[in-house]
Amino acid sequence: EDKVVQSPLSLVVHEGDTVTLNCSYEVTNFRSLLWYKQEKKAPTFLFMLTSSGIEKKSGRLSSILDKKELSSILNITATQTGDSAIYLCAHRAGNYKLTFGKGTLLTVNP
Amino acid sequence: DVKVTQSSRYLVKRTGEKVFLECVQDMDHENMFWYRQDPGLGLRLIYFSYDVKMKEKGDIPEGYSVSREKKERFSLILESASTNQTSMYLCASSPGDRFSNQPQHFGDGTRLSIL
Image (cartoon, rainbow over the protein chains, first blue to last red):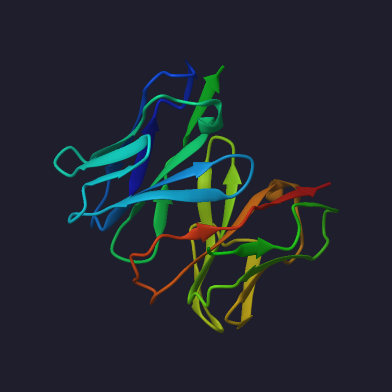
């Protein structure tokens, strides 16, 4: 059974700090690893990493896939209070199905 | 921008009622999904539809059914609501065939309480 584990489960930082969120996966047939940000409502898509695209960056957010270690990290630099959210990691195997981790709750204090 | 709209943000129903949750997407996506999200359990897939009238069970289909009569609309039905179905329900859609590697886009969710 495919499994996705995120760590830490929760994290509290101050504005301006840099954070690293972790995601590890045990899968039978890797296709892609996705990151989502969830504030009060809809999870919004951040990045998708594949064998042909192991590093993505958008503004202060970046993500790297380590296929050898079966893991991914999401980095946020110069954090702002608006970055406070649950960050979800999900893996896609051979078909349509996404297997989600339990998420990391990030709180950024002013 | 992809828009996935769920008909209600909050819903309160009674045990034994038949409950309908509606989801509409405006991007002509082939695939639509229903998840529930519970603290400590994350998102779990209830049902998936890859075309009109086509559906597949997810990880936790028991107690639920779905309907997809039109491409843009995917309904989740609780045949006889029970208190353990109190949860946040999220609808999502994605383009491509059922093996597509495209990201899923989510609606805002319906927080359903069964009393």
